[in-house]
Image (cartoon, rainbow, N blue to C red; front, top):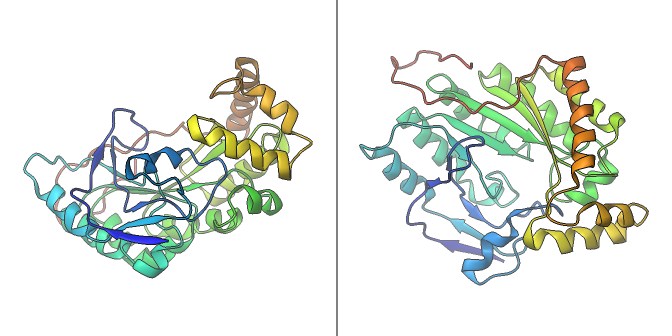
Length: 293
């Protein structure tokens, strides 16, 4: 079910600096239905348990963002789309909120970080290119594996991984900084050297600025539904996987072994720095291309 709501503000601050300290989520809930999604808890205050089935649409989000950016206290920090849900999830095809949001970013020349599992951003490449001429734009694609058999189960409503990665060429040509978030690496399913190497090779070929792997985390309400799907679809790995996660994180030995493998791939396919959030961009003459680094 789709529910339209009115947002009171757009920007959300958090202390954990990843892509940015500032997030905007134009939707609550996500139609990509990734089995490892960490964000199910975000519906709790709305007294709604169906994160995938009930999508809340903040129809006034562009107006709220314009007000937030217009405040004297706003320092044009980079803003991350999106901390919880994908701005280009399937419902965006219907509501088309992002073009108006991008116009607000252009108006205020504000840096943007976009994380997505969709190729729908290509629809808005003209606006994204226009923004990249006056502010830093970083397009990050989230991918766990290039194996479509696996991805069709783990992220059933997302664009096929290879298609997501291939679109990064277009955004690099449009003046954007690009990267791959190889998240999550799923133990015993997508953590083989062959699988990781395949993604690293494509990252090198695509010429992205950064690639950042991270191991699966099973916090809170993510754990049970994730393991239920694994038990049904990949029963051969279920016993080992469930034993590996005594809590939210995999055990330390496994993590250390994966770090060794990932460092090896960085050396072979790099050099790539680990992800460094974009810096706040100072005022500059209108129309001047800003450095991506």
